[in-house]
Length: 302
Image (cartoon, helix red, strand yellow):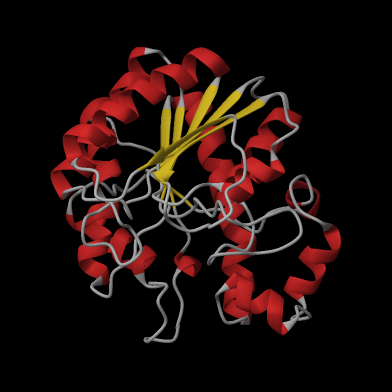
């Protein structure tokens, strides 16, 4: 059986306040889950290093980057970011965008690659927001275009929250098409404008949701004609997610992953997946939901 290329850093999870709403340990738990499921092999995990300054600056303001690195953000900026500043936070924030970039590069050669992090789609050009420091999707897409590794990229975002930062950063980039399927009455209150936005009503169930995902994906492919797709497989669509508001079951999440990945494979489109949002005090259970996109990838691409 062919193994799926995975991208992961042990620095993604670190010692973090247990009472904080963001489940920082989920990345480590996801790695353990995939290892137990046999998805992790001896030779299929790639470890990213720190993102280059010039690459990060493709999508972010130099002054913001410098102030974040050196703990010079204001109290208001830190509140908007939603995460307590620390050296380990800086370290993981400087690695994760490079992880998504590495995932995209591998996907272009292999057909698929999966990142055990990423999807920090609320981060904007000059500020962090909603647990997102730097926008890995915008950084990676802009870098691959700049390197001439791809000419057209589709960012297909199925996180329950709109990818407002991604839409804003890439609003004038004709080479990158942004598509967001999200719960309309959810964070952020003021939505940005993606190339294609689909706002869903609260409480939507599996059957209705899967129809929307299928129709929107076909439309996005037709409109963007991409060489590469970044797929944000957020699992905060789950019915019992702490920040979700949709009514999607675990089976519904797995069906979505199979639908998206099989469609992209049928179109011969390389896909790089990121895990996006998911919020639960039970992080091992949350990790199992995040693992579903890896399970689907293994089924479809092996």
